[in-house]
Length: 120
Image (tube, rainbow, N blue to C red):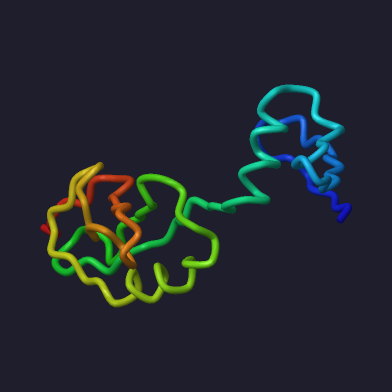
């Protein structure tokens, strides 16, 4: 199997060529060690950070931005978004507050990425 990826581990955006062999993978095209690590992760267990918003009741604004505390398995993104979209929190919300614990059974939390005070 031969495939290509664009590395997103650093700003260089290297074009990675990956070939599967009997003994593992041959990865070429990376200019730093992060590229090889990224390619192996992407082949074995692709993960992504998820960012979104959650509705806020009695908040200064109607939505508060949130993100996963760590990258989640790529195949669970839609499950995570379904759970996030069903959440409504009460103001005040503070940066780093856990909004959803163990989202979609991943063991990873959804956290607020800004403060949201109560409306005046």
